[in-house]
Image (cartoon, rainbow, N blue to C red; front, side, top):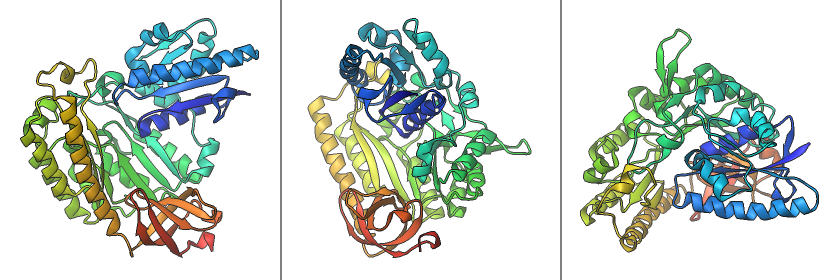
Length: 450
């Protein structure tokens, strides 16, 4: 069989999409971790971060050299570019990097075999928005060899976004909000469970905007869907990301209250703590409304940990605005967060705004924000020292005899144990909290591991 190498950038949805590309080509290609031996190389791109296109062209320059070396050995190589940069750049990619044979957007992965056949005759560009067709035609993931080795898996249930935040390219690269049909989601979740998956993270650009109908045809949202997923035998943990504050409804809050399998961790981006900045960002919520939502969630699930996203230096951000962001960080006490300097994304309204914040001031504010976030993260982790927490062990650690797993709050936990513990949930007493991991000792082992 031919060999396939996929380089994945960006979010969990890109990780999921890369796995489904491998599924679509499973009949003709086997995955390799070495691009130098690959007959087909795919770069799955992300357009969210700064200079995404430049990073892509740098990567394509390295891959061109691999292609040329293989050609000298009489081994042809095809190069494809997928994902959000592919959707945004289109023909520009092939114009700037003639070594690329195929450019295809996020909604065309199900067409990969046919697209590759067409690319044999010359460069191909495919960037249509057809999410419903994509999910209907992608092959079952149950046969993926990787699943048998990974007790955690991603499952995309929603794509696109209708919010049009002024800093964000997602509506232009992933399209309008699309909710995958409930039956498809449950079928894939059951297949994952049968393959040995214990934890599912459901994904979407705006995952809590998911909506569908139940067996009786009544409208339901993410909260009701999580209840159905929690009923699948073998699935012991559920998570979801990324959510929008405006789409946190009563049913979802009730799911956090009622479902033991729904982990006490929520990624709920706010971006800024200042109302004037939130207005310019078109977030369509105030800081007070965000905090009220956090309060309702914590009332329903007191042990929940919050994660967030922050952008500093958005056009027009004043010292007072930045102080308001620091204040919301202190009030929420995030267990973790992602924070970035604002970078204009071509084609978005924010890129055209005046009063851009100077780069040195952005850097200064980002450093202060990250220090504040890190203080809260460290305090949250330190509070777990001495506690016993359930850990899902996912893979061997870096040291011999060490296992790596995840706590309910998504921290990496390292403990000594045998490989038979992989895929099991065991109680671990946390001995020490380090900056990026928790270290502990297994105190009770599941029946399967005894």
